[in-house]
Length: 567
Image (cartoon, helix red, strand yellow):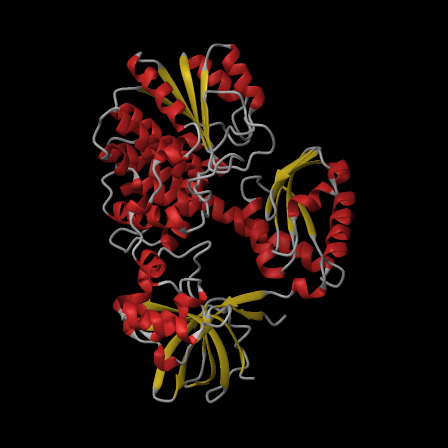
């Protein structure tokens, strides 16, 4: 097994740590963490520890917001039908639900629409044009799409339908001609927060519209549960506005009165449990995403818009079953992909193209992520169907996946995406050539060091400093996630105090001690790495601090990220 490379952040300057200790009255370990995270200024540290909604920009920071609000106001006054067109992931579903709900609360006629992933394709396209025309809409508002949908927008305008785009994807060229393009990544955006996901853009639009109509701001604020759910699900960077939105949104989500979310929380086994970004991302979001991956994302919108418990419970049960099916597909596809990797071997493997019959296009992206995680190489998984296949790719930090696919463009029918994730469509006859070309491109651009798994640690922390007080204070750093990862600490030369135990053949449980301090530790999928450990061995461990509440327990625990013999 390849040993993971541990990479530490820059060391904390003692003077900066001392300043935070003096001004914030916090433990040294937390102050060191703040400094290595770039929060040496006391005021910046306070904002990070206590993110609030008053830290948000005004909605007008989004370019063309005035145009969007004015056009929506005219639509409300004239009782026009407004089609709200979303994308088929959680971000698109939640943004669509948010705008439909706010427009209806303001007396408007709002119709939700999301294209079908397999039959209609991605983005605002022909299906959306037909839906708007069929609904008799005078205005279309997009959610999580539309920035590059020139052809569809032109078709809508030609039929007398205005368009407002609300999106967060990077423009690939000129912006479309329409009423407004609300996108924090548009090239002329000089204020606002570029990290917003689509639901954040929709929330700002709702805020601006509610204010312009003189309505109670709670018409917008009550939807922060959707904002938190979608921002986490879409792996939005949890800094700046997103951090404040998710922090407050998790509170709203925990007490949500929305029948659909209550049903989803119950069906996923989270009822009565603390609502964290981790539980949202790994438990709630996949169930909602299953609708868009295996069925129709409109079913997810119907759940979120459900007005009564009976309807919500029925749809939540459907999504639970879809998610179980998706999980089974994940496992089967992952096993088949692993077999292909094992057959090929790793000696001359720099990038994988793995293709299979019967793989579902809605799950290959998830499995590609697992392959990258396990083998440390960029991977494209292709679901074959007849003479063509649809695939999803994921990458490692050292390899630009979109650029790599560009080197193979003559072998592909279509491709698109960005540096770490992309999609492809390919003819069956080109798969073998694509496999060889993609590997050659990866080999040319990568070095052996690039293929060594990396673990990024914040700082060294003796076990004696792992206290209940520190764990409690670390909760102020939540929500943890992209751009604000859960802190990883390292303790060196600690002793294995008791004989390690292997659970379910792959997980490791052990007790570690250092001086008078002793703590239990759990290593998920680390049984192989700890197979040779014996009581009394000394090890270096990388870990996160958590509470073990299983079976009524309530004790500090180390969640191991990696371990090795003490060096």
